Image (cartoon, rainbow, N blue to C red; front, side):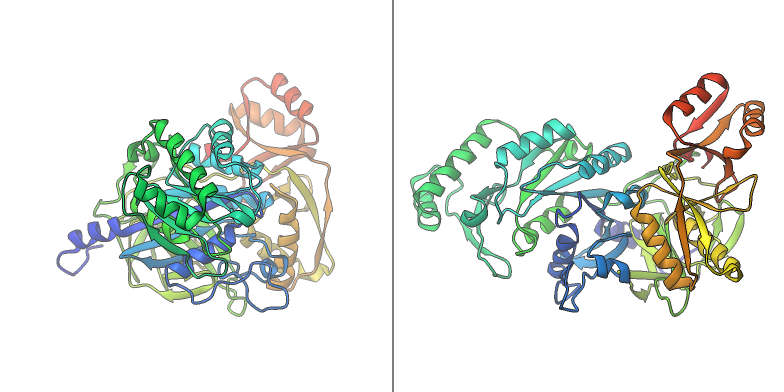
Length: 540
């Protein structure tokens, strides 16, 4: 496709450099959806932040669009949020915090260029944070850290720094430093701008008090600190800053991009404190759209020709229209509404119709988009997660696998006449990654596999509310599944000997389920040449 207006290449590079595409990762209840709301608020995208767990009020988080999310007060699916900030175009992907929905987050992290890691000041580094950080590390996604809830009782800031470095193996550089905590929380000292940011309960943004001297140890500075903080907290801040400065560490953008160090910020998302400083840092430090690796080659963002990949499929965002949207990360070139593109997996030319950009479930048509942007494409059923879309070149993008499920259920349909609707529902939900469908080779049953048990509740809720099919799940004793690969004769022999445990996934690939780890070890020992894969990445 050739763009018909002059200066596109210059415009494209300029637009690419404006983009910042990132995800927020955290353990449940660290305040992730709240901070998402506040980032949107400061970006001018919304006028009022919704309460994630609003009960009597009708305010709900903008990023939580599914009715089940509003009822439970949790995010169960990733949502795309796009907004402008200081001449930058921000693509923010709000990911599920609950560990039972982590597979959606794993896939989402393949579509971003950086991540904001949110930590609870009282809890520190928690289990889900470790898992998600490991995915960031594997994907080479640089991280900015924000320690939230400083207006509550918390761990010592130095202990939190030490915990991050020991547990995650990630060095941190405090850009801001807290003054007190809980009831005595006074705000933060901005080490970069050399200013105080004073916390005021209920204030919109907090009070900024610039210091008149860059030397925090000067008499003039000490006087200003005592006036604002009191003698005790002023002395503590001076001691803390002196200790940080004497460590001799300096922030390196190169080390941040390599994932070796994270800029660290403190604040309170619920009270709007520290968010503006954080957002400023995101546009200053977070990388512009990065290159993406394919099996064939590396694709650079400033290439003229269009390329993109599908990282998520969401069906029925508008239940009234039973629509289906393929969420596409643009890797290179420019996107134009109505353009034709090459669908690598099928080898067909497809028209990319009704392209949309998102504010959670709210959508608007988009005429143009550039590398780094997330665009929703109306999908009648052509796309699957991981599909590449180009101007004709065969490009298979890496890093968007399915992960082996750990919990299984058999589907029981209450009305047998609804089997067609059930099959449609399961096909669509599996293609969007909400659940994995396995069909045993010796029966007509359908087994559903998930990474976390709460996914069963979500799937049941959506099948009933979006497809009007009433069904139940019967839990199965399986502990895991593995995709089969390796020597073809070994695969064929194993399938014949274990037909009762063999099934096909939604793409027709053979897999085996097992009820105990020892059985998997036994099979591995007895079947040389046979490979048992934890993900289907080897097939993609």
